[in-house]
Image (cartoon, rainbow, N blue to C red):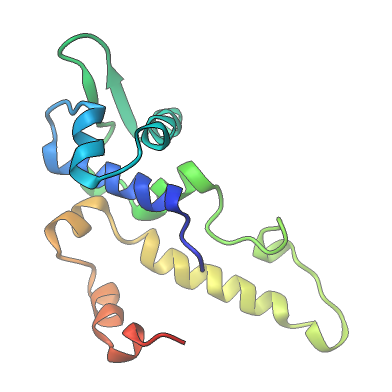
Length: 151
């Protein structure tokens, strides 16, 4: 799995909003606190608003806020809002792939990989990350020494 810069930035923006919530947060604060490029963040904020993950408020006292509590927004939802489906194979969803002969069971592997991603990303909320209290299964995976080895 490759996490795009856009997805990484979107999650970081959402974490900043969660950390400042329920107060309104100006985009300059989001940009400065995370050291992100302005143009990129501005386009990400539009996509997050379209996905109903954030609200924008105009005016001198305006800014951005989460549309729901941080515990009700998963990392998977944020990634999907800016990048689309969590797993694709040549532009297809894993369950839409079909192979023959020696590769006939490859679709099962792609579907299982998507399920593993969902298990982590859809079951981990912004509140979990913000507090550092990750779901037990995610924490166990992250604490495994093998998880940190490059391959």
